[in-house]
Amino acid sequence: MKRLLCVLCVLCGFQSARALDRQAFTFTDYDLQIKVTPESQSLEASGKIILRNDTAQLQRNPVLQISSTIEWNSITVAGKSVQYLAQIYTSDIDHSGGLSEAIVTLPQPVPPQGTVEIEIVYGGKVPQDSTRLTRIGAPAQTAAHSEWDQISESFTGLRGIGFVAWYPIATEAASLSEGNQVFDSVRVWQQRQSSSRMRLSFCWPGESQLAANGQSTAAAMQPAGLNCRALQYEPIGTAVPTFVIGPYRALNQPPMAIQYIAGHESNAHNWAAAGEKVAPFITQWFGQRQRPVQVVELPDKDMHPFDAGSVFFTPLVSGDEKDIQVVLAHQLAHASFQSPRLWMDEGLAHFAQALVREQQEGRKAALAYMDERLPPLQEAEEQFLPAALGKASGPPPRGQPLAGATDEVFFRTKAMFVWWMLRDMVGDDALERALRAYRPDQDKEPSYFQRLLAEQFHRDLQWFFDDWVYRDRGLPEFHITAVYPRKLIPEDWSVTVTVENSGSAGAEVPVAVRAAQGEERKRLEVRAHEKTAVRIPIPVLPQQAVVNDGSVPESDMNNNSAEIKTPDSSQ
Ligand SMILES: [Zn+2]
Image (cartoon, rainbow, N blue to C red):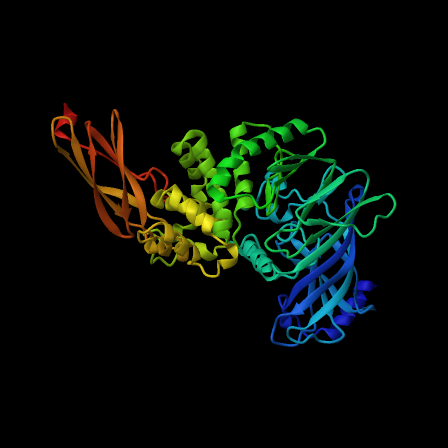
């Protein structure tokens, strides 16, 4: 009956589906009380939200969306029930592949920049659900490792926007089968609500503890038999509000603050020790920490870790301490260095991981670590390959300039390589000094960091920033077009190596001349679509020339060497 009434409401209050603008309102304030009951896999929420009309027209139909397994129970404005149409809206922005959408008809339209306060009540079950991944063909088990969000007796953990809409949102439908749509729509949402405020109070039964990425505040009430915690996100920024409830214990061992599951104490100590060991190296690169590194354990070793800004949710696997150090380097870098630009914020955190790998076992190990992450980037940049250019049926364009990239393959993987290349070009000292001089509040334009670097390093880097940061020109593609060995004095050789870059992005790349006894190398700047030669002296018989040791991401690494033919090599 309730549903039927709603449909009738639509006929009188809501004009036409085509006029619906789901992004008309920004959600500026959340004030929610949430009761979580693991035993029944459910939550009940009530509270108020404030919406601001960010369009130039009067708006009367705000849209409120929550996960499709939750239902709207009541929506009121100024104490009076308002008309709304409840429907399931198919969208992969939620783990269930759908949203319970309420299309509200307000008693009065909201003028541009005006706000409306809406009281809401909603509730329902949130079981583990991988529908959005399995329906595009992901194997069920792998999908479950990534979609770990759920309320259940064994584990309760919910991530917000992009995973489970456990608080109201309003987004256009997004599909995982449409390239980057889901990711883009999450980013758009996050950017719009980044200065919004969220106040949450959680209550749950039993002895369990809650861990989250919000700031703790005093809980207003503590109903009998329930545990309660209050949190705020002020502002929300780029955080995805995330919480877990379980038998958590705390281990505070600076710089680490670890919340682990009872019984896993020895793993927690191993992680704390690994963090303590690698911390000084990260501080040297990225400056003093602004906050501790908070790690919250996920109970199943196969669950995918989640980087929730100030908190890292991860299984505390027991393993090689070196591997744990590499994982923690990412969070340590975040704790020291923050930027509103993803390619800097995340890119540098990934770069920090490669640096730690290098410190552990040398440059080769670091390059191997980066190389494992290269194939998805090569695929994302395929459209720029000479073979694809000018073809109507090439791969779909995915390119994004790094400076504003929202696709992870760019702001994580490509950015990691870009920081590594910059470091190879300018040296550790200049890069460290430029990073120390960085002030997030002064970063108002994309060229800000380039200027900081120019104060430390006086060679022209404009071409590099143009090819790699301000624009997406794909990856370089190197091959050796000529090698001329010349014998100087009895034992010494000079080898001239000509390298062609048929890609559209230039780079400074290492060129090596190898011999049975070792190798000599030089760095060579090869701009896009150019050929450049370098002369490399070597005191023994040269056998092979190789361009790129893997530090420059390129489209194809399989055509990078040439044998050196000398009159002596046939002896
Ligand atoms: Zn990160």
